[in-house]
Amino acid sequence: MGSNSQLMVLIIIIFVEILVTVNGELHRVVHPATKADGSISVLVIGDWGRKGMYNQSQLAYQMGITAEKKDVDFIISTGDNFYPSGLTDENDPAFDESFTNIYTAPSLLKKWYTVLGNHDYRGNAIAQLSPILKAKDSKWFCMKSFILNTDIAEFFFIDTTPFEDKYFTDPEDEVYDWRGVLPRDKYLSTLLRDLESALIESRAKWKIVVGHHTIKSVGIHGNTKKLVQKVLPILEANDVDLYINGHDHCLEHISSHHSRLQFLTSGGGSKAWRGGYDRTSINEKEMRFYYDGQGFMTMQITETDIDIDFYDIFGNVLHKWGASKSYFSSI
Ligand SMILES: *[C@@H]1O[C@H](CO)[C@@H](O)[C@H](O)[C@H]1NC(C)=O
Image (cartoon, rainbow, N blue to C red; front, side, top):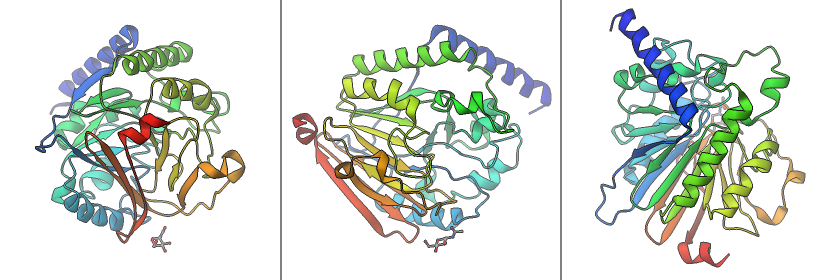
């Protein structure tokens, strides 16, 4: 593609982005079920793009084996797709080196529904949303915030980076690509309003919210205060079943005693072993599982049940959790 047409595409994207911000409607994507019983199988990975280093490649190999066994329908990426500073533009070789050339197993050549993390915002954040990347690798799908409809579950992907105050007040020499985000207050209030109304309207059996940042975590980053204040009450009031995130480079499961909501961290896609474990931020009884190393998560979702498994780099299952809809309803 010539650089002129690339520029045109970029202009169109920015224009669409402005429209979306103004109209404030979450884009909807449909992923039709392919299995006869309507069930879906999903693999979740976060915080991965390091050109194969820090066990990213070894983990990719294991993901391929597990995705095959589990007959995975699609992959969710919880963000921090490219380290250290996102992509420079649509032609950044990191896209191939950290994504296309790494996740090559046939079982992983499915759609990757992806959000942005804070590291992605340190580069050209808009580039990751570009159709040029989708044309390069058809499994790539990235938007700031969107809704993914499957027959039995509805996934609400939300852009959590702009919620974190410190990226605005104390950016520590980092430059963030806030195009489309400013004015921040308006961006956040629109996103919160759209998320809330989409959750209220949802008739899906299962409601699952995905974002990069933690709501609850005992990892090095801990809880994200602003999300606890602004997003958590919306999730609890609307019977959301799972909140799935990355950001802390670990695997983690925290339950909650007063609501059905489960907090699941899958941020172990490459660099890990940061050693954080701050139990003071959490009710010990809600702590189900914490693993500081590399790994990923799978979800099997049927009309009646949900099953979660966490795996390490060798494919060992480290933690299993499952519940039926009646369990969720009884809380
Ligand atoms: C890669 O994984 C192994 C097994 O978990 C671990 O011992 C090793 O420290 C990891 N390497 C890095 C760079 O994280």
